[in-house]
Amino acid sequence: MHRVIRGYVDLLRLHFFFAWPVLFCSGYLLATSVYGLFSWYDLLKVAFIGFLGFEAGFVLNDYVDRHYDARDIETGKLTKYWRMFGRRPIPEGLVSSREAVVVFIVLVAATTLLTATLPFPHSAFVFLIMLCSYGVEIFYQVRKRNQRFPLAQLVGRTDFALFPVAGYLSIGNPDMLALFYFMFFYPFAQAHLGANDLIDVANDRARGMNTVATLYGLSGTALWIAGFTAIHVVTAVLFMTRLGWIARGGIVLGLCLLLVANMAISRDRTADTGLRVLPLFHITMLIYAVSIGFDSFF
Image 1: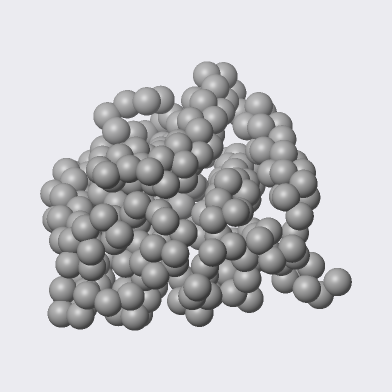
Image 2: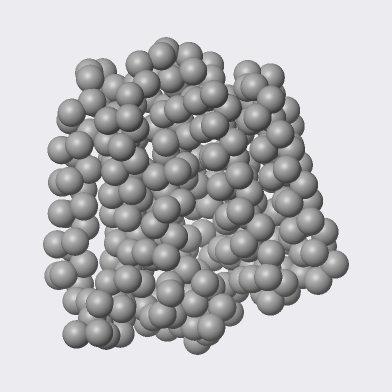
């Protein structure tokens, strides 16, 4: 029983459970600064939409790649970082493929029901982004099995970049501020993806995946991370023109952490260095989300 519970904990990446509703709610709170309409009830509802929807994405990720994940040769790096017990639950038989499908359906159904309680057309905005994100996730995982250009990565991370935008659209409209949030977060998502690929390069080679690291090597991956970080700085400046001082301070702090991460990777372009600095990306993401939320609330 304990092994099964651990399998589900790893399937859902539950030790990161708090991050996804915080990020999603940052979009909601930003929208309240423009449109008003804040309520604690709506905030709680939006938090659950973000949490359940993102968890469904994790299950989908593991299900689509279940046969390829069985080829992993390293479990102590990225697998251990993202999964508390360091297990691949579906390939290892802790969670069956059928059970994973059931969990995915339940999570999507719960997310859909909550989304349906949002006023129209906001419910439609969020639902369409959810469907597009799951479709993009499948495209990302399938496409990277056979590509010579990283189209899977460039398209695939739009789902992550749209996630806080979906929170914004839960009460807001698809306006310039929503676009600025997407432009701000997309290059961060790409830099974050590059760091993950740098760490997991050995497993991706064993799986036969064409990731940034397997296509361009470790030096190319470091350039990918640095390049998208540079773009992120530019879009962050644009985004900050629409924000207050709390959010601006949080974004500047986050950019400083990303600079530290990039400097470390540029000095030592290895999987171990990527693993050491990956928490900086996630701390940065939380700082962004919390500072935007507080700035909007106060």
